Amino acid sequence: MPKTYYFASADQVAAQYDTLTETAPAAIEEASGWVVGTNSAFSKLWKPNTVQPATGYANLIGSSFSELGYRTAGALNGTFAAGDWVASIKVKCGPTYFAQRGFVSLRLWRAGNADGSGATQITSAWKSHIVPPPTYNYIEFVAVDEYVAKTITVPLAAVTLTGEYLFVEFAWSAVTSGGNAAATVYWVQNEGSAEQLLTPAFTLHPADTINFVYTRDTVNLEYVRDTVNYTTQ
Image 1 (tube, one colour):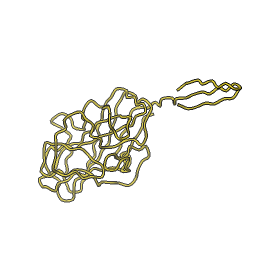
Image 2 (tube, helix red, strand yellow; image 1 turned 45 degrees about the vertical axis):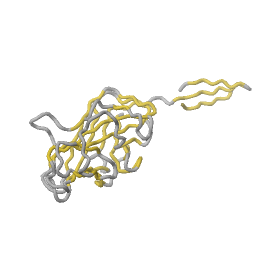
Image 3 (cartoon, rainbow, N blue to C red; image 1 turned 120 degrees about the vertical axis):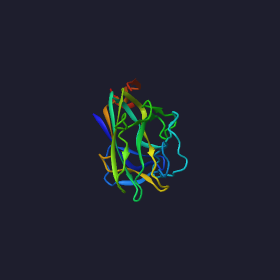
Image 4 (spheres, rainbow, N blue to C red; image 1 turned 90 degrees about the horizontal axis):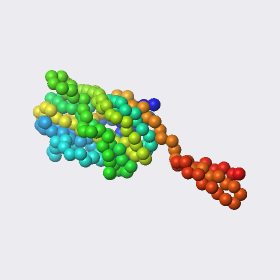
């Protein structure tokens, strides 16, 4: 069965990871995002619980994981089939300025460490909703306090996680500045299906098992792979 992970505001690690949850949240949250200001043609990572300032923008370069974004609550053991990973995302402009234009990109990662250290990238690069010209499919606002939703589709080969967490990393890329130092783009989450990651079919790996066979005073251990089965003879 495919998995549906909702982008939820509950902290896994405060100001580092919010939650990929399979339980749909219901209370909208839009307290994080980016002050775009007068910046254009630059990108900045999304950081939970934070409105990123206009200073310090940098191009999306390099292959290192930022260790910011969303994370599953627990480690996974299983394989996602080859197919499309579809992220539904939503952003909002501020109450005063709306000239800013841009796009959202994502990367997927897996790691055995809950803090994301030593992560392996699942995607080959940043993936976004933009398409070739002349369409582009940028996020464009036409009024203050406007919401814009987009879908990012990422086709991938089969992905196996073995005792690993799944992480999603996001970034905003400015194409046109907001025309004012206060121009802001807010990240929207916690609504349920409006902000989610839909995966291909997931097959759970069989739990590791150990079979104990007791014969009078002798115990024979039969290793199968993590649950313990105990029988007395």
